[in-house]
Image (cartoon, rainbow, N blue to C red; front, side):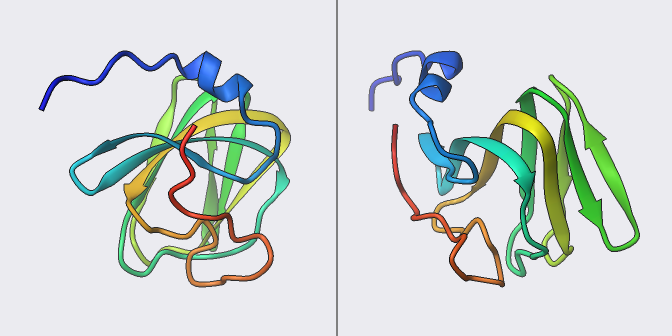
Length: 122
């Protein structure tokens, strides 16, 4: 299989116009690299079967945890372990990359109206 062409993250982010709707830009094995724009508060949720990686590209993200919080700025990342309840919060718009297995719902174990469709590529 040939190597994939380079992916310009800024150009891909410019194609995203809604918040909390991750879009796939690449895959590696069974993992997807997703870009998203976030603003406001999301909902408390957990991913019972997988860890989730957040990499902030622009802005400041606060991830609330039941026993504290994690603050991330541009160029910073964290891995939320499987089963850990968390709630991302972005008072101002945040651009980020998520790395998680194919098919993982953005709302984790909560479902609901804020669930984004899976496998949407840009």
